[in-house]
Amino acid sequence: MAPVGVLEAIDRAGQVGDMVALDINYPFDEGVTTDQVRKSLERNRLRCYAITPASHSRKFQKGALTNADSQPRREAIDLYKSSIPIARELAAKNLKFWPGQDGYDYPFQADYEALWRYSVEGVREVRLFSRHAIRDRVQVQRAAHTHVLQQCCKHVARNPGNGREQRRNRVRSKPLLPCERDPCQGAAACGSA
Image 1 (tube, helix red, strand yellow):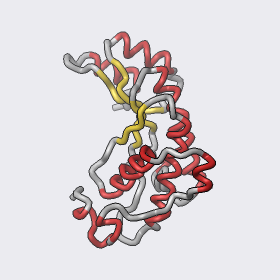
Image 2: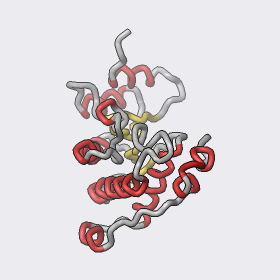
Image 3: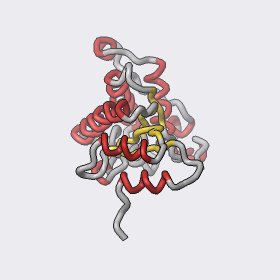
Image 4: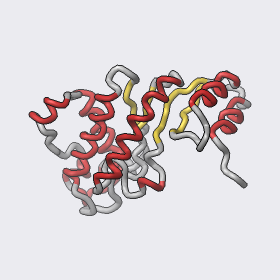
């Protein structure tokens, strides 16, 4: 069975009686335009609730915002930024960060301070780019490493900064959760077991 494309998925969702809004992954299928997606939503009397950039794809299997390699991190940030005009065109109120591949699996597997710094830097750059566009939201997956990204988004929301402030006041990494202070405590300490 072939995968269902975004336009067919919208048509199928339109057949569900009480469905009113959709969360749509971006980028769309090859050759599908934002205008086609918008018309499909209108035809099915649906609205776009959120755009979720595909930072969970195979391309980012070693992490998107927290990838140790700077090139995939840059590509993830650019993906988030490129999805902002799409969200505007579809009247989506939310851009979701879904850190499905970010983080770590085992204690002491990662440099926690670097993960925090990369997350804050990435989210801050996207937020500064989208400052007047849409609200920032986090789709939280129930896993320990997503708590780090959730806290990162809260930190950036409280401390949006700008380019000069970022250079003057470098983000300092500091553990926020028990599992970050003592990685041996694991996911259970973060409330996600």
